[in-house]
Length: 308
Image (cartoon, rainbow, N blue to C red; front, side, top):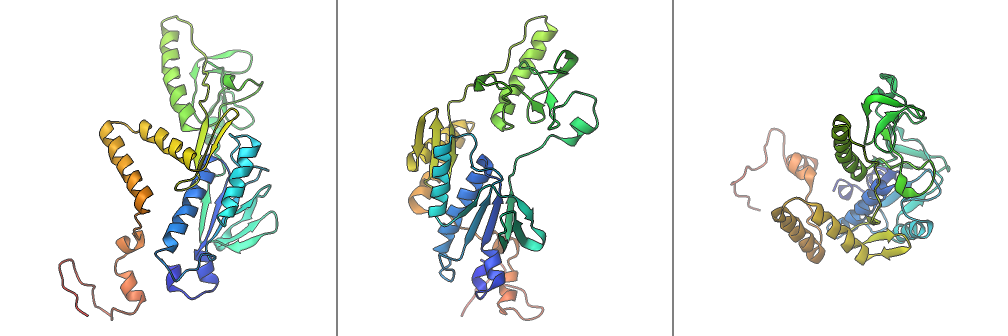
């Protein structure tokens, strides 16, 4: 909306440039949704050409979406690039001072929106203000039953789960594998943690955390997605339907499911419902910037009649 009121130039280009750092699920899904939103917005702003918005996805590794295998990951990159995005692999952000983005591959440009999704780290309180054993990443070292351990012996009455715990991934089938820090693992580990503490208090054996995934699914924008379960890979619109179906089932209560599903169906058939939040939050600004209000005047209040 701001860019449409400017002539072509550096400031307009900056406002139409988006940078997302991190090629995991959060980064790729957010990037794909922003790209789809910008495409939908172009229909409402004929002043902006389809070649003007610029989208950059920056990933330090040589691939995105580490939870899927190489070929589906490469397909996602090609899909994003066909839609006009630029994916920087094996690249790190050097700086973004003043909105000037500098990447390790030598690329420099101005970006009006920067989204950081490059993973997370352990809470510093865990490794700086406790004497519990931690690994090289600062995560609490735990056994598969979520007891904190030094590696050779268990720390009495100490348990850990979720993002600050280095939990062995027994379902991965390889030595040294750890569960990724996401909400799905945290919720399941929390439930098992409560059961294991209760079992320990009652003198019963504890259970190890084992979660065998039913597959991974990601949305790449409205009507686009990717799903993989072992060697089975689904791409495009069917994968997007699977993604939406899974999440609508996770919504509590049938009333909420129905409401959300109805909104999704409406958006699929009639397009996105575009609302300018800036106009809602600062209603007077548009009048002032266009010189339609003179000093001291106020815009018409609700219920006032405007005539040309």
